[in-house]
Amino acid sequence: MEIDKIDRKILAELQADGRLSITELADRVGLSLSPCHRRVRTLEQEGVIKGYRAQLDSAALGLKFSAIVFVTLREGDRTAVEAFERAVVDIPQIVDAKRLFGEPDYLLQVTTSDLNAFQKLYDDQLSSLPNVRRLISTLVMKTVFQDRMLCM
Image 1 (cartoon, one colour):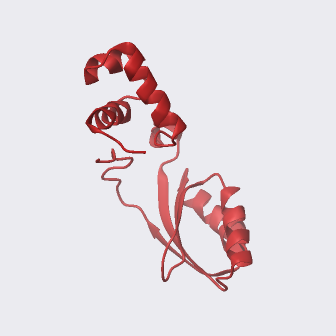
Image 2 (spheres, rainbow, N blue to C red):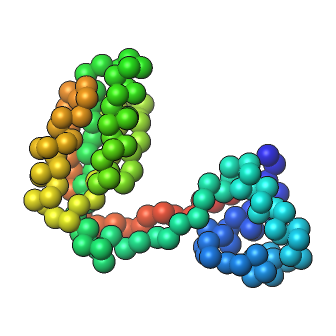
């Protein structure tokens, strides 16, 4: 799909405020209602817009502890990788997981209520993930920014 200047405006506005009505969005990007609605629907159907969600404040929810966990696997074959990835999906405290080139193999962003909750998660679940050779954790001191808007 080719994304033009108007699509970029639509995407920028929706990233800034996903709760905009089609009427408000059309006004902001300088389109009438029907063409704006068609463009948004096309962007959704093509998978450019993957969904809409509320951004939550983890600290306000009592999740004040964050750690980055680097994971190195023992084996890198397809079966081992798939088993690891299936297991990681089932741990809700892992809020972001990325497979990396080289070592380590994965970067996991973990959010818990406090250090004790992280230690329990680490001991009970992270250390027993399939095919894990090594876990290295580092504590997040401060989140400077997150969920930055994508530039196009």
